[in-house]
Image 1 (cartoon, rainbow over the protein chains, first blue to last red):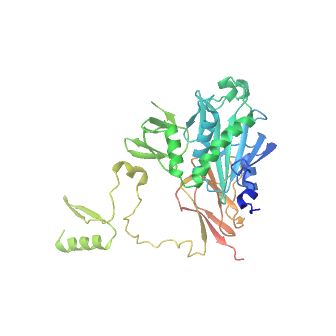
Image 2 (cartoon, each protein chain N blue to C red):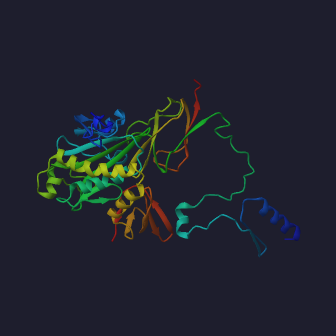
Image 3 (tube, rainbow over the protein chains, first blue to last red):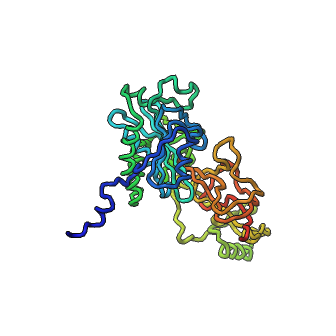
Length: 242
Length: 153
């Protein structure tokens, strides 16, 4: 009998992509905290509730028990490009039922309401890619004083969604985009993300700065043309003027 | 201005990193310039944010404070362009304060850019002597954030 080729012995059918292992938690401080301390690659940590879920530096993310999909992917790789990959993956994963749009820098909107967000954290060569999606919320589940109007998949599509199914739908494209990053196709993923924003050439306003977006830089920052020169914008809420 | 003064000016220009000198004296203005090879003029709209500060600044005559290295100090530098945060979240205590001892690879701050929160770790064990930037400050790649006195093992 011929020897069995080695690759077939070591489990040719074992899935080794992102989400090869999925760990569920009832309540954690934040799934990113878990991913950063566990330091495993490709493992997904899902929580029913987060007690300290957060957005960009400390903006609290409302993660009430059972209403949304809150998860993180642990990745042994640098963080650059992961926010682009995540935003594209969530958008792709929700199609065709929902036409989600990516709003700079990394919020997911549909019908003008925020449905999800992304936060990447990095510690010593290990990245935690955190994604939150509002799944089951009814309008009364959101606090009335939210900075940005929010909605859930259920509210917007009128279809019942299962958080676990949403997770699987996001993981497929996420695995592809992250693989592209690992293969060195950062520019391609960045371009897809920049195209999805649809901001190039548009007039925006952020605080005192107002002008036309003339470039989306490699790191994702916007270059805005103002009467006094180009200004780099890399954080904060922007408003689209036209 | 006499010829000697003009010679003096030419010499200053040649010896310095300056590309241009302009002097106005009693209604007369003299401007000397030299080509700066290898320096590409940036498009005007780029200057605003990418202005290379003081590329041609003459050496100050005053005695400078000894560098951190001269004082036997190490710095912890920013790994990227972004915003400096002293604490994991607003309202939470800072990761470290001056006088605190840090272990190798201990997180000392966060630098955030484009929703990527980068925890910055100390490359060496030591005692924090100074925090060189303010919470919420924009920081550049390689900019020193902390000065620390290493603890020899």
